Image (cartoon, rainbow over all chains, first blue to last red; front, side, top):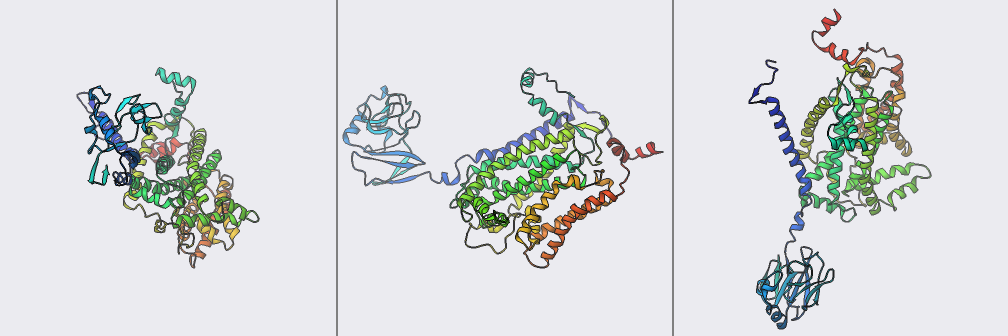
Length: 175
Length: 412
């Protein structure tokens, strides 16, 4: 014990430094200890591994539609008729709530592929119904056209187009 | 020392629900003997471990599936796929062992310093109830991964109840929910494994309440007589407990990160098979002394009764120990008997982990007999005949006497 009085430099005592240093280390350590408890709720490795789905298109006739599952979500895959493609193009894009051309929404015009979840509150819309002969969401009355764009009702955005690529003429890989 | 808040919000709450004042009394100005050693840290460490087990357990249950076909794989899913799942599961599995380590040290501390004696009998009882609940919880938790040890541990322990005359068989069937350990058993064990820790929390609150009513015992075993003998809990013991926690966490981490399976059994990484029992089946280390007592008796019912009796006699301790001196520090004979008893418990633990063959059977029987002789015969007799060392007149005196120089001035 050579010096028991606190050494002061510019009004900062050694003890102040010790408090801040100990508190800082304690706070960082606690945060690091808490992180695993938070991160465990994020998608696990096996869930992340299911990030893509391959779908065989050969059995889908013109004018019909299937629902595939990608990451637990329904994906509408519609083999559109000429009339539907025409109707989708015959729209003033600027007048839409979420302006998008039909070309922007498709790789090949005959195949419309989109996530079948209403952008309002997550219900699955019904096919071939609504004021625009596209999709109609029974939950809160959103009407989508033959390109899956929102035309009427409370939904703010068009039905989302997932990332996809045609592996060959009869196979599409979603995700 | 009353709690008078200055902050208007605290004041507003305090006049309606005096919970902040209650916590203030419990963690801040609780008058604590000023001579507590590190042996008194294990209570707060046990509380810490209870929180760790509950938090990691809640998180694990988010990923676990309680079904015989899926339980084992869901545990592997936790280990391989869930983010930090390996860490959380190893924390929980090793945490159980850590919890028992600190609780056993806490119990032996109580035995050495006579913490169970009047007026702390209820405090002691509540502690024993916590211990029993911990054993039930740990046992059921060990069944959940549905490995070979899980399954056969569950089979053996539930069969213990079959030893009871007349009602034995119906009780075992009732526990199983069928005619063997199966899916209904696993489901109820999961439910109870989730429930019991919260029951433990309730008993811990009573335990701390009782503690704060009688006050902490201390190494001298003498009660606080005046202000000279005590110091406020904060900052003195909060800091001491935090330091103890830091050291303990290093010990915990050594197992967690470098030997996470050291305390477990490799057989539990084999999925449960109801048709084949592993060659060498032993419970987790913290049950071994009781397992040794169970096997010491060559009779089914006798073994079961003696095993439960080994814990039951601890409830009678406050009345079996006739000495009015608490601390073994001033009891030369009891102090030696205490250490022999500790060695006896270590021997029981060792024997419990060995196969049921000679010489372990004989050693186990002798150690079992000594366990009961110590508690039922030696403790009452020593209390009657032992001549204790002179007690200091107060905690303060005991502390000051140790200081170099103080003795010369005081006793000259």
